[in-house]
Length: 367
Image 1: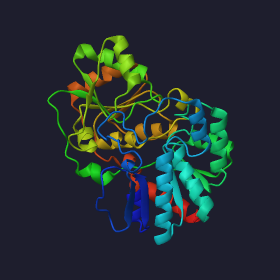
Image 2: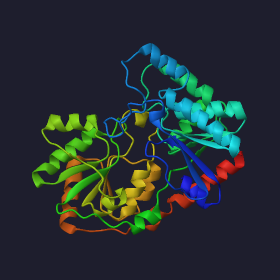
Image 3: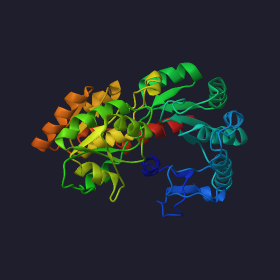
């Protein structure tokens, strides 16, 4: 999205956690990287799980204190707020778009707005309480406190926007993240010797890992393996173990787009399960990327209506909720070897330029 906004001529600064050092950026795009080693000298980026806070024993009192103040990543938030102040002194910021990965992200924007008067928009990539545990009443109260100062909310699903508009009484607009159509177009497919079912990205409580494990069980007699590119999922591992089957975890040796375009079949698991279903679900950029790759793609489970409207017009995409029927569809793809069109027009309409333009219009109105 930052690149999309920069392409429209807006000077954009991205403030994020990054331990990989300085890299060249476009003239209109700069990145301020809060290095976790500044406050966590023992940080090991190759370790699993990746952590930006020093692990400590669980404490209800500490959880409550973080909920009422800086969110779960207090030291990152404090360092990043200092960075935001520094940027603002040298190049005044017009508006802040705070992307929700946790409460700390919105706390930074809330405090910055309170100090400077700069308006901010609160973004929700996932339902706000999807990853919450502990004192929910306090979490809801703090969320209300922060968002009371936000000029608007951006959401990734209509149902989620409806719920949050009523809950927080803020104007809302649905803006998906979009994807890099030009990057997808030029990516060279990474072909495999074997036909594999490939999933790219995270699998968590918002995904039906039980359904995925059932699909793997049906595919095992056919010798079709599930390969997961991304962080390991304990939920999926437990479900697979219970059925006596396994999936393979794989690192990226090329770009994700090259993996997607070279896979036998892609697996999309909609983020509409469990707590995500209660909050309306969300639309992720990975779905759009999988659709855009042109590889036969299975959506295992019910897509949100707005995403289903995209998938229904793509001949290489199937939405199936029964794992046995899904396995039969995948086996048929192995025999057919069909390939769809990269950046099909129905998907390309949701690439970065269109989404960045929608976000630009919103931010311009508020700033």
